[in-house]
Length: 77
Image (cartoon, rainbow, N blue to C red; front, side, top):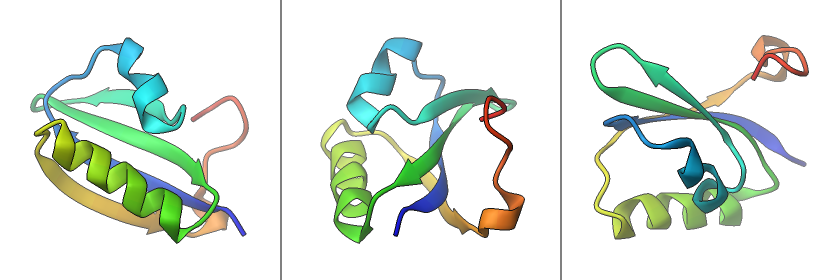
């Protein structure tokens, strides 16, 4: 079953990076941080995404699995 995640990394990434991150939404936060958010199909996809972040030498700040009830409505991600 897909799970909804919010992954925070250091720095502002260009929107072109969204293809590298399984088409997750990129949101710029204060303090030069980017929030990647969206659904991933399984734990293997999450681990693959985290490996990609590591391989690109990006600084991981946090990974949060969100409760489906707190997930933004469609079009608000």
